[in-house]
Every structure is written in structure tokens, then in C-alpha cells.
Length: 162
Image (cartoon, rainbow, N blue to C red; front, side):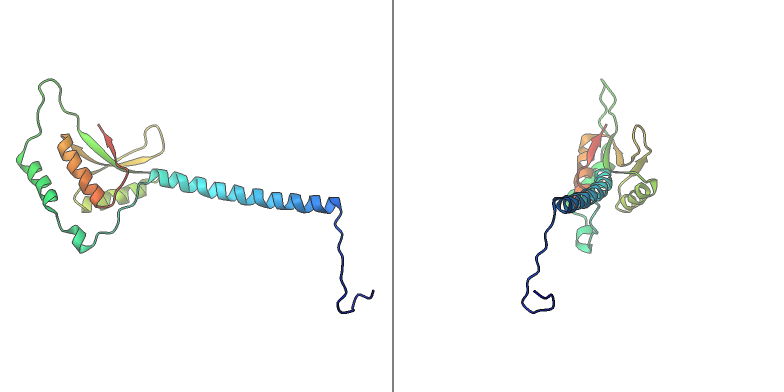
């Protein structure tokens, strides 16, 4: 049969060595994509583990204080912290996030300060994370009120530290 003829069929035969070559090329390509995905996912997992959910931008309606928020300030101004005769109360901190870069921790601390929280940035101790904490609070009632306010601002996974 002539090659240029219309309607003629061409048959291609692959030997075992060709099939093995194609198979190993596909396996190598899959391994390359897996390694790249793993590397990107590992970097993303570190940054997400270090950062809690970022705060949502507050609209004008969300910024208006609620009666619960106002009662928080009344409690702070009007009451003294309870003094226990047996043991002094330890201050309570609420950890909002942890960052690998000090600049990011500083930015969040500035945002918290603008929202009316007393932020503290703890330098790395046993690991590489700069911890952004709110506090100190003298009792659990004040810490719980601040926790509710933080959650209302969009912060999640807040850790209570004593």
C-alpha cells in the first residue's frame, strides 16, 4: 500500500523496551509533581499552623460595642481583682497567633492594639515562633470576656496561657 493513499491505515508496533521507557517517564513525571506538591504543602502547613485565622475586616456595624462589651469595661474599671489569701493569682494570657517572622507578629500586635486589646509579642523560646498574646488578665472572668471579644473579631483557636 502506498503511504499517500487516502484511507490507508498505519500500524505502529511498540516493543517492550519502548513500553518500559514510556512507563518510567510517566512514573518520573508523577514523582516530580508529587515532590513539588509535597514541598508546597509543607511550606503552607507551617504557615497555617503558625497563624490562626486572620481577623476579618470589621464593618461599621460590627465595630459598634455591644452591651456585653460595655460590661467588660465596667467590670475592669469598677472592680479590683480578687485576692486569694492562700496563693496569689497568676496573670492569664490569650495566645492569638504564632509567626515565624517578627514583622508579621508586630503587624498583628498593632492591629490588636487598634482594636483595644493589650498585645504582647513573646520572642521564640524552644522553637522559632514569635507568639502574639493578649493580656495579662488578673482573673478568668476578664480573660473570658476578652476571649469572646477576640472571637467576635474573627480570631479562632485561641490558646489560654497561665
